[in-house]
Amino acid sequence: MTVADVAVTESGAGHPFRRRLLGGLSDSIAERGYRAAIFAKETGQQTTSAAAAAVWYPYDVEPADKVIAWALETYNVLVDLSSKSDTGVSMIELRQFSRAGKIQIPDWAIPLGARLLPPFVIPGGVGESPGLPQSKFPPAFKSGFALNVPLTDTTIYLDYLASRFLTASGSITANVFFKKLEDVSDEFVLVINCAGMGARELVHDVDLEPHRGQVAIVPKFAGLSCAVVCDDGLKTNSTGTP
Image (cartoon, rainbow, N blue to C red; front, side, top):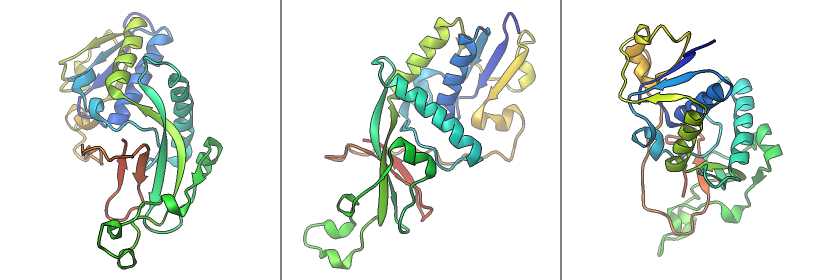
């Protein structure tokens, strides 16, 4: 591939984690010598990624046998980046809780140092409120485990990825909205379609619908120094970072 080789299309309406994967993918393409260009409706701090709870943790993704291997490669890259002050990547303890019963530590998490949480660190329920007897209110969670994972400050990390991409002679064009893939210039011999929800219009995929991705910003909890995940399928699931 020569001249302008790879076009990466973005809609501005994608899932934050997919956006960060897109950023890394684009850097990888450009740094391998291909001429790469990103076209997007929004970029950088105008995207949903700029407000994302960007903690590394593979969940609710398929096919698991492939995704886990990819996720572990990403883990190793992010751990390396956490040693560099300009990346926005750091390490944080993540605690996975279950409301349904005894939790199982996934096989992939054991080599990363995952450990079961002792009962005294399992969050309680409303029975911890003053004046209410604990015996009348069950604990909020029944079990959990913890491991250290990468955390990205997206206000820094997105700019870091963009800087790497531009340094590798990539180009980024914002305020672009393709109505169909055929609108991409013929000078590109490969188009990577990362349109997210924009694919409903771009490739006429009317069956596409959003899945999770909601972000709720709440006041900081005093003493909360870890990321929290609860994804046991009971009514609500959540991921939070301090």
